[in-house]
Amino acid sequence: MSVLLGDVGKTEGKDVKKLPCIEEGCVRCCTDSGNPLELTTGDILRLCRALSIGSDDFYAQYCGIMWNRIPGTCLFIPSVGLIFPCRFLEGGRCAVYDVRPIHCHLFPEGLVVNNSNMDIYRNCGYRCIDKGIKPAMTNKPYIHRLKDIDNRELKATASYFENFNYCVEMKEEEFKEIESLLTNVDYMEKAAKERDMCTEIINRKDKGRAESIFMRKLALLSMSKSFGVFA
Ligand code: SF4
Ligand code: SF4
Image (cartoon, rainbow, N blue to C red; front, top):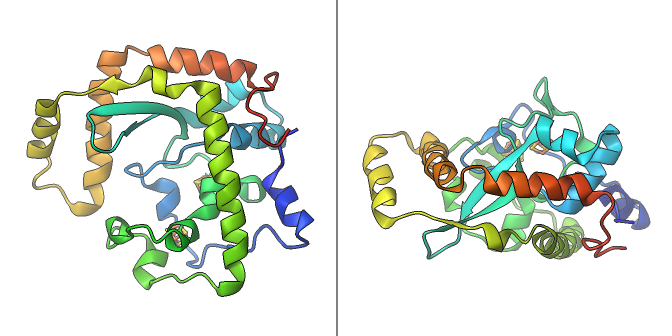
């Protein structure tokens, strides 16, 4: 059985909510469609269990195929992501906070401890980042532990979906065309618009192939043993 993030907190005798959002009223990282959120197989199983629904219903209600460009190439790789604005947002709060996806837990502290480039998030409505977040030293072991779990879950997820087999290639001139159409677009909206435009082109090329394969695999997920890094 997969380890729940809640269980990770409990085994350490700590509250899993120990990385609360520091800016009351901000929902930027739950709504920014330019920076959507990939789900791991562990996330999907945990949320399905909490919501008492099957993985196929879960996908239909909350998810979509998310295409991410492989850096340095024109290839886009599909994965299962939450539709943004996230459908778990209720009245500006997360309705599944205790069992939220691991990448929700890790934002933005996971980026900070990783020394990631935070500039791409600056001045686009991410209040915690604009404020200059610094994780407390006492939280660092917890964040590193979550990152280890995340790495293992991402590997297990890639191995289960075999998503590298379903990449779609865009042409250089298609990127250039998109760039030229976005020259006057506001910085905050640019990533979202660019993602939408790329997705439209990719969907035309892919013709729903990746989604139908992923949906078949999702329907079998709860029966599968192959993703079980924590089995
Ligand atoms: S961007 Fe930062 S402050 Fe805003 S909701 Fe996300 S974690 Fe909270
Ligand atoms: S699951 Fe919760 S924390 Fe994660 S994006 Fe959705 S509303 Fe935000």
